Length: 140
Image 1: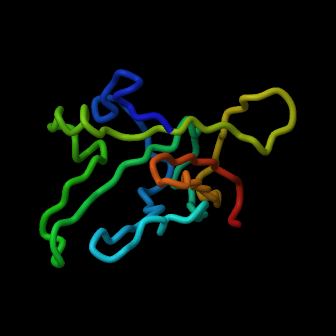
Image 2 (image 1 turned 45 degrees about the horizontal axis):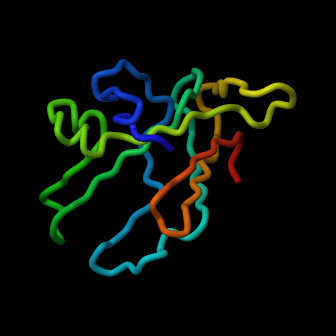
């Protein structure tokens, strides 16, 4: 995964189409969880909400202050549209995606149909600093 600022652009300023709903892959309670709560890998089932080519998985985060979740800081593109400093500090992460289920020469575009079930595999480094995403067809 590479952050958009490393690519040299603000994702919040780019035209894009979401092909699946925003879905959490990890929840951490900084007041209770210990280092390593992320484990090695997780799998999340998604359903494509429209047909199209999946070019990348976009990662963003949100943090809430206090028990009531009254204050939220987030890096979703719609949350940073008017916040240049936040985009330049954190921005969004992008993992380019290819269809690994197809035999032969790579890379192959990952084309989905509306309603198709997908599995998002999230792999965490041992220290929790980096993530890698892979998209698979079907629910696993």
